Image (cartoon, rainbow, N blue to C red; front, top):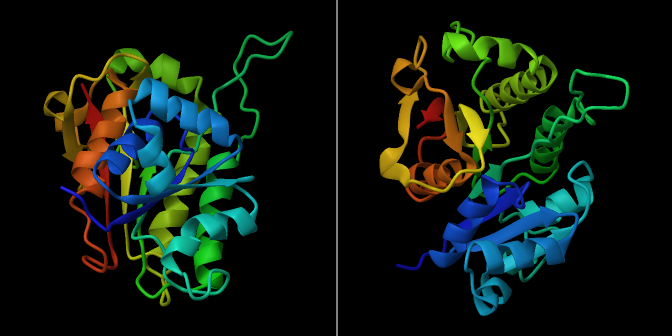
Length: 268
């Protein structure tokens, strides 16, 4: 079944975001993606996710640039295909934004602890996205779906006890994710909010395993306490992407549930 829904992707070549983008394209959605390397994304979609080249050409607008640069970010949020009469100033944004921005820890020579190449990447990117929306208020406020992480709940430990030593090593990237979440949560409460709603998806430790399907994903909403039904060890990136498509993007309706948000834990 095809739809006129429009979706913007940031971090589109990521292991969780790319599967979601592929499913959106196959569902007939109009998609935009901001990447550093367009060929890398098209090759990934064609070879790893079986998206036909013709479908990519028809339904995906690829913007090449830096995720911290407001010019390409604005082009991704307000694609010309949605604003044909005024591509540079039209205020028809995409319906929903999917951000899977993150960076892998690196171990520098002489150090045994992992470091982040850009320790504020996630918070900087969401700030740029929101500022672009504030500068060019859209006709209908878009929804926001962001990939975050477990281990940062304000209600306490939301990972198995045996995982806590590992999560302690991830303090810096987790702090960045927490600040990112706080920025999004605060934004939806603004008097002139740049987004209509948000869903923060917190997966357990990510793996590169095969997708098992959304029916194999345990998930729970954090609502006044730990989301106990979804405390687990690991989940594949592919299943996180599938979950975001099936449970967040596909049921999303533009303009509905404005001023709301939720945090969802997912695991196998």
